[in-house]
Amino acid sequence: MPPPKIHTHPSPRHTLLPHLLPLLPSTLPLVRRLQFHFQSPHATVLCTLPPSTPPTTPPPPFAALYVDRSRAPETECWLFSTHELPTPAPQNAAAALPHFLALLGEIPHLPLPATYPSTQDPSRLLLGAVHRSVLETLAGSPLAPHAGKKVISGPGAASATDEWRGSAAASSGCVRGHTVAYQKFLFESETVARAAAGGDGSDGEPLLGVLGLEWTSVREGEYGLVASRTEIPRSGRTMRLLGSVGLRRRRRRRRQEGGGGASEREGEGEGQLVAWAFLGPDGSLTSLHVEPEFRGRGLGKLVTRRLFALLGEGGRGSGFEDVREGEEWCHSDVATDNAGSIGVARGLGGEEGWECFWAWVDLEEVERMSGALDG
Image (cartoon, rainbow, N blue to C red):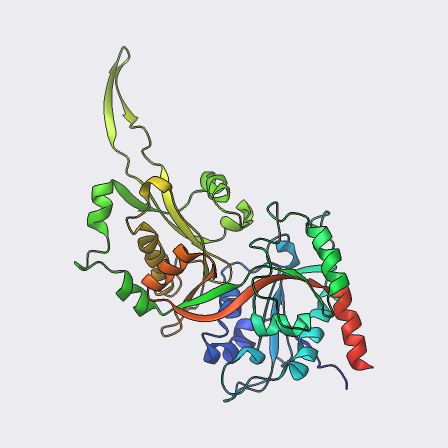
């Protein structure tokens, strides 16, 4: 059986989004990746549908991906397939696998950026937020319960090469290691606002006044602080591009008398960033953090709600463009063993969607698997 023909979409907002938007929220990570304000010159969008294909209801079976290898060692690729849809009946794995292999098989033929890390093997691809059904199809078998690590890339990923070799020997598919399961939580803008608003409708301002805090965004000089509070690798280069919301101690100017006359000084700790969150390149809540001395006051919910509200303003300030009314879905990926973050997501009115993973894909094995199918 000949492999599916793969088509490049040079203007995916015009040719691919019309197929993806009617399928929200299942398509949310790829939709937001296409709406992100910065599109790298190294990014490529591939699909099994030609750019000239008009959207239909129901949609034909198709798969699409966004790949940008200049992002390595962070997430390089996002993939969506109608195989993921809960209704109508999803494609079976045998029908979906040729689509996945054909798409992934195009990636080695794309130019590798000069900035690609010399320490990373280009035959390895970090696939992000991949649906369980897609990952199991690529792996060739169901995933073992509780398997995987929280982090599989960057400095926090120990023995990555050994794990790669070991999984290659044990696997019949092209997956070479994956994270633990992350629960996708879905939020509609109205739900977020309703769930997080205080009973007095004050948007949390009285609490911030009592605590001496004020709204802010994360500044470039604070990226190191943010990175030090999480295991998830996130470079300053990436954080600079993301929409963020934070809370910092309010500055109070005090007059100070000295031999040279009066001057002004700041009190100790004033201006300090104490809580923050970002929207990742795929629109997911990321790097949500509250410093220990400010926990237990609901600040995580306040920061999240304010960040999500940016998407409800057409994307202004959130890092996303052309987010239309009725399409303001928000989402977060929470490790299934992280009870605290799950509680925050539910408290904001989040609904559980599906399980997703980050995974290393062996592009050389993709080629071998494609050849076996063709034969």
